[in-house]
Image 1 (cartoon, rainbow, N blue to C red):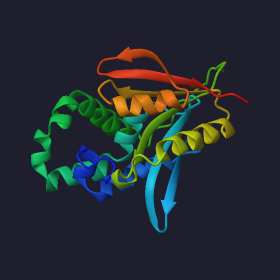
Image 2: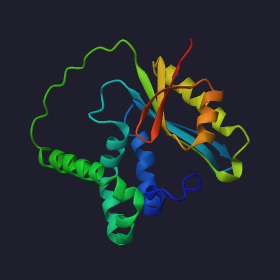
Image 3: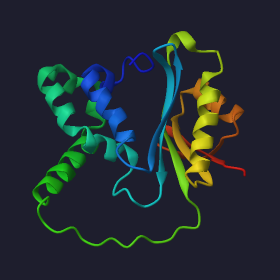
Image 4: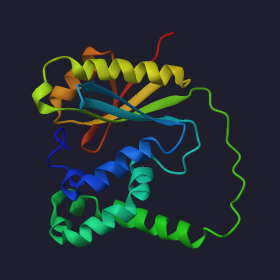
Length: 198
């Protein structure tokens, strides 16, 4: 919450933030790494190994996982419906609400058998990284990236990917210092990747 004080997740409150962290612990292909100082978490990052076991991407998966808590909080804080981030992402939210409702109604029906296609390269996605503002400039972002890479390697990934806002030059410089390269562009974000060396 300190790392992203203006995000909608933070504005919705601790319950929604807690659900976000629970999503990272909800399956074996998701993970969190963090740095503690005393009893306080001063930096963290979360990721997912893209092994074909998730029906949707990380943003949709996390949104659906925390949908109930998010909706309850929006009922208590309806003015957040006018927040620019929510308005901009309204089509995404509506799509995920429909998916969630569809899954709820199909809960008692037998699940189809899904055959996973083998992939040549397992990838991990860096979904989030945050450092407490009082800890900026101490190299914690680099430490977290190194821990993320090590965890990705242990989980069998050969490549890491992320997206970062084009206007977040501080983060882009940090990623580049740690070996990430810009591989493309998608709307307001750059796509970056790094090969994991053995």
